[in-house]
Image (cartoon, rainbow, N blue to C red):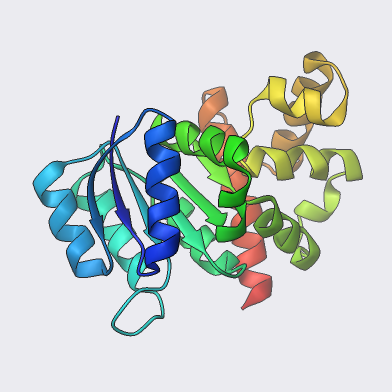
Length: 219
């Protein structure tokens, strides 16, 4: 797979390049600002772009704005955002705009090379990956119905769903059977009053409800 990296910190950018190459990715461009990122994606049409949330010139949300534009103009390019701090509003905005091929991780997660590569590949393959700390902060801020209907274990399952984990991965993390996870998910979908649809679509809607609730309470 081919990748573009947008990160203004040279040291971190070098580290991410090395990790991607170690994981078998071809890094076709390295840039330090949002303008350069958009130009690189337009030229190379990579499978994934690894993007810093805050970049020159303003160091606010340049990376997020560029990521949303990439997902709109080049939907085949997945985007993995890297952030210095937990900014769940940006995570919610990205997921709400597109429910596949999106990731949002704290930069400290790069140090855990194996986990970072796993999340990177998940996003590149069209999945979703949210940093556990982002999910944890959303959980703390959740105070809105119908999320209050969920049991503690159902909230645990929903949090892991928001991280982008499969039923098998959730079962392994919670040390329960996959059938138990499936039952919890069915209960979550029912309690959130989600419309009838295919399983994957309802699963995404559940995560969106979770994120929207966190963003609203954070605001």
